[in-house]
Length: 149
Image (cartoon, rainbow, N blue to C red; front, top):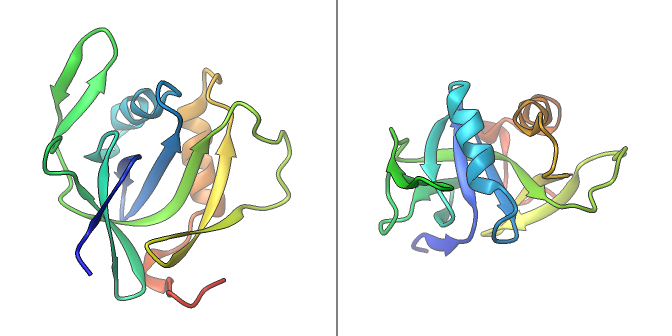
């Protein structure tokens, strides 16, 4: 099956990718920019292509916005790019995120099971929380399987 477009922003941190979801204007691009400042690499902003491959979810840049990140008040700016990355965690920017989650939620994207964690977007340290979430809840995409719950 060919890659399908998905409204989200994605950055790679090391060998794992964060798929950042949220309503328009929720801060997906701003979070990506803060993570890029700390060493992450852009995969795609606001729209990525998702493909199930070998039991893993692979994020690819959308051809129409490839290598571009929206920086509010500055416009669409070019950034170094990762051509593909295996998604390890879905972050949902949600103003109603629970204060103390017991565990990550389970979601499916393109038929692949992934952990999802909700974060409140108004935090001044959201980028640090995102890195901690990846460390604590992110999976090793080499171990993922389409049959995971």
